[in-house]
Every structure is written in C-alpha cells, then in structure tokens.
Image 1: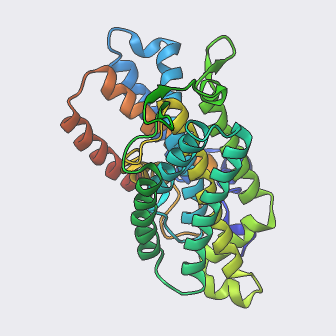
Image 2: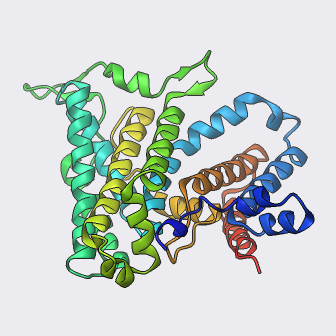
Amino acid sequence: MICGAGPSGAGAPAAASLGSGGVQAWVHTPVARALLALLLMMAIGAVFNADGAFFRWSVHRDMLRQVSVYGILACGMTVVIVSAGIDLSVSSVLALAAVLFAWLTLPGQWPAVYAILVVLAAGVSLGSLSGLLVSRMRIQPFIVTLAMMVFARGLAKVVSGGRKVTNYVTAPDGTSQVVDLPGVFGFIDSRILGGNLSIVTVVFLACVAVTWIALERLRFGRHVYAVGGNEHAARLSGVPVSRTLVAAYALSGLFAAVAGICQAAQETQGDPETGMAYELDAIAMVVIGGTPLTGGRGSVTLTLVGVLTIGYLQKILSLNAAPEATRLMLTGAIIVCAVLFQRGK
C-alpha cells in the first residue's frame, strides 16, 4: 500500500505496452496530463511570440530565474500536500527569513555562513511548530498555517522595525552610512555557464533533487505517502505519523527559509512585506503539476512541470504586455482549466 501510493509507476502503462491501449492508458496518467499542459503553454508562446522574443534563450533564462523562488516554495509545499496537509505560512516565513538574513549580514555584519545557518534554523523551527500543532494538538493544517502566516509576518516586522533592512545603516552617532553588500548577495544573484544559468535556478534544482530523494528514496517518503493516503491505516501499520508530519512541515519551513535568502539577495534588502501571496502560486504549481490536494499521491517531478507551466504562462503574458487585471484573470482561469483537465475520466 505504501509503496504503491507514490508516482513512480505513473509511466508504467507506456513501458508495458507500445500499442494503442498502452498509449491511451499513459495519456490519462498525471505525468502525461502535466506534460500536455506544459506543451500547450509552449505552443501558445510560439504563436504569441512577441516578434520572436519567445524564441530567444535569454527569455527562458529569465523565466527560470523569476520562477525559481516560487519553485523552492513549491518543493516544500509538495511534501506537505502529499501528506494531505497544506502550508499557508510559506510566504510569511520567506519574508521573515529575508529580513533576518539581511539584518544579520548588513547592520549585523555577520559572516554569511553563520547568518545562513541561523535563518535555516528559524525556518525549520517555525515549520516544526506547525507540524507539532497539526500532529499532536490535532488542529486542522489550514488553521495552524494560517495562524503561522500571520505570526511570521508580524515577527518579520518586529525584527525589521517595520521597515526595509538595507545597506543604509545608522551609525552609533546617529548618522546614516552605506555599508558594502556582502559577497553572498552578489553570488546568489549571479550567473554561471557564460551567463546562461542563474545561481538561484541552481538552488531551485538542488531543492527539487533533495525533495525527490526524500520522497522517492527514503523511508520518510514512504511514510509521507502512507499518512497522506490514510492516516489511520498508517498509524495501525506502525508508521510514526506525528514524526512524519513534523518532518514534512519542517522541510517546508526549511525551503521557505532558503527561498527567503534568495529573495533577499535578489532584492539586496530584507522587506517584511515581500512574498505576499506567494503561497498561492506555490499551491497552484503543485496542483497544476498533478498532485491532488487530497494527499497520498504526487511527486516533485510533477511539481517541476507545474512550475514551468506557471512560469511560461506569466512570461508569455508579460512579453505580450497583458494588463495586470487581464493577467490575473487569465491565470486563474487557466489554473481551473488545468486542474479539470488533469482529473481525467
């Protein structure tokens, strides 16, 4: 039951049969539906290419950079949703991490390694607290993470004093001075491979790899699928349900902290208001990829396809100078259509 809950067998019908029956069976798998949605988005981009701009690599490179922070959040969200939960607090934890990282490295002048460790620990702590409230106190994940969303956003404003944390700092004598940005800011916001790949995209892909290993190659992943499929049955089977849920939310908090560090580096500041509604984009990426909100099924590879689908949608609308209102309405409509399309027969 536990092993079968995962997505590893999603493409099995295609491998088992090359006939029309096997192809039809494969088309109705979550992987196929997610890929078809992405291919449809690519086709739309090829048609509405903004005078050929869509065919330039720089556009795709920039899209990957812009969507990477959302994708990092979506990795943690995937684990939580597979466990039949939800995490509405990731955007606020991101903001807290961005503020804390900027506060430690700019006015605090902490070494980057120590600042990163403190920020990651803060993200894990908040995620673990959410997991404890869900698993031990038996509070609905929606309520717990909604409360954590408000709490973490408020804490970010307390740490920052209600304003952005920048490299303009106040000296002991009351005068303002400009401090140099730490090298870690420039490194995270830089590019490699001749300027063709952003470091933040590499971080996103590393988070995808870590999530894939956790869900597909570790006992923890089997436990997550079991808890998401049927928590009561998992508990009777000897699965440590409470520890699994705490670990799932802790991993989500960890990825939110990573995203916050990247956000601070890209913005060269810590803004307590940053990341507003990012949790909705992360959830949309997971769902569009084909991971159901009911839990027990899904994978981070499907989420990766969902991230690319949303990323290309936003980029195509941006290239064609779509008004903000139109972009929001069209994005919502496409999300609903994609979810209906993925439900299958």
